[in-house]
Image (cartoon, rainbow, N blue to C red; front, side, top):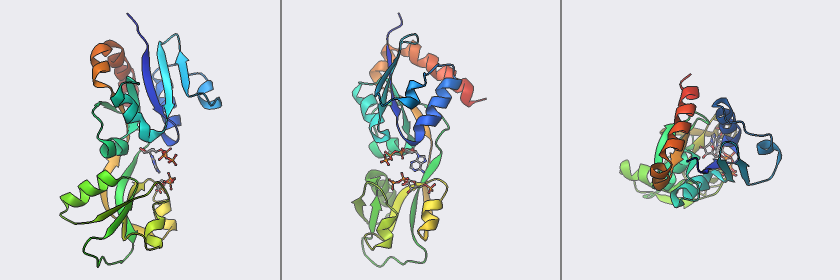
Length: 209
Ligand SMILES: Nc1ncnc2c1ncn2[C@@H]1O[C@H](COP(=O)(O)OP(=O)(O)OP(=O)(O)O)[C@@H](O)[C@H]1O
Ligand SMILES: O=P(O)(O)OC[C@H]1O[C@H](OP(=O)(O)OP(=O)(O)O)[C@H](O)[C@@H]1O
């Protein structure tokens, strides 16, 4: 029996690297992936359905079971802590989460403000450090916060370091390394084990090359 396997794919930064990896693993993904605005693309021959989603939503789709598997950044998994299986480190879209701020800026407050798109990651981190902080959730341009006096520190993604540098900020601590992961819904993994394992095998061969 070869039933449809549904995969949630992150649009944006991870998308192209994920497509490249799947193609190298032998899935013939049509140009439609790059050229169209369609959000659901079926590969009839492979019995594969792709759902194109916001990166932050992929884990939700997989946890809820509307997608059997998905590709999600480790940052999203650390933040959302979804109840899913993390099957494989795809070693793509590498970056890391870090604490940053203005060089030499002292923290005088009893509970300094931390601006971030990752409130759970940030509060776990500072709790572990035994530091009391106030988390301010932002949705982007996080580096603005310490420049305009909204926060003393930020917790954000660093890749090349260019955004920090161009805004006169420095990294204080690295919190976690981030790459994209293949995740699976727990029930789907049992019900469609053969199909999912086959994909894991095909991808592993490419990653370990
Ligand atoms: N420099 C980077 N900045 C942010 N995310 C990165 C970076 N490099 C790799 N990533 C990965 O890409 C994912 C985010 O992709 P992307 O920036 O396209 O989505 P987004 O955060 O939803 O962006 P937006 O809100 O601007 O649409 C993260 O979850 C992370 O795993
Ligand atoms: O170290 P770098 O290579 O400079 O990359 C890191 C920057 O990229 C991301 O921002 P993004 O471009 O997604 O913008 P936004 O979060 O402000 O929307 C991230 O939030 C950092 O600001």
